[in-house]
Image (cartoon, rainbow, N blue to C red):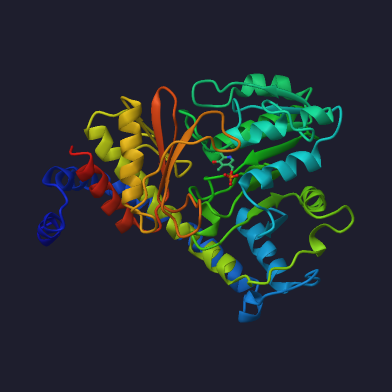
Length: 420
Ligand SMILES: *Cc1c(COP(=O)(O)O)cnc(C)c1O
């Protein structure tokens, strides 16, 4: 530590905060090494995919109008597919969010009379209106005649036995990899593989979909490499590397991706149209940076867990536990402490650090939510951010961090401002 400790003290970080962070870093050395190893593995995948696809400056060029034969767009699709270990992928700025990417898959691949079986408990809040669990959209799956069934997790895992049984009467299986806004474990790709194999053994023809949000590049493999038929996610989370300005992706079996693309634009047209006047540099560069940025945010998440564990808070996952997404859940004893925490994270942000967040009724969420988000890309959660639904038990979900250095300074600022 030496000069660092003096330097941090000189910058108004409290002695207690500096010591807590130092201790946590000592304990997390091996955990950090593990994340760095995974980043190296995934960086290699990306580097090879870029080279094999002969990425060149012309791929970054803008396109206009219909975007027929947009080489930048189509090459990015191929790289994404390769990295996800899937037959095909579509990556588009026109996919507005992760929810949109997921909704495209569901509404494209399910039709009247079909059954959608979610085997990971209630899906992420914003997907519930799409399915028709909540809300009254005339376009919900429910109103389109799709039956919805749900199995709860057994402990922190999929109840494979029940899932196999229930899947006999379901054509579409839904798995959420990440914890989302729930106090549950995220699922390992290995466990997803076990579940997919068991289900496919009795129901070959069913489609297994994975909501891959927050999971990309946390592990060496993606769900599509272990049998999932189709996955979707957001580009202002992991795979955009903090650089992609907007968008989402869908990856999976070619015929399924093709149908989802037809839902995105129009039947018969699909992926052939769609231009982007700003060019694709940010998408290529963001994807290339993503494994490193994900490792930075994982290190930050583990550090948050480590210091708050020392202070007696419940955390999920624990600081030294294996991670399957970038989210760190931390429990607080009261609404006031929860809000103070989120405000302290906001105050440690490079953008809007002077702004004070308040809880509000976000579209798509069932409770009021307070969000600390001082990001370069509006709402980006691969950048350091904290979200907390205002409900008991009071849990803040912290995620992201473009650099570990920022995450560490943010932890120091938060601890200092909370006067630990
Ligand atoms: C973020 C998230 C979504 C939805 O993504 P948005 O980009 O916010 O629409 C869906 N599922 C999970 C698990 C998520 O974390």
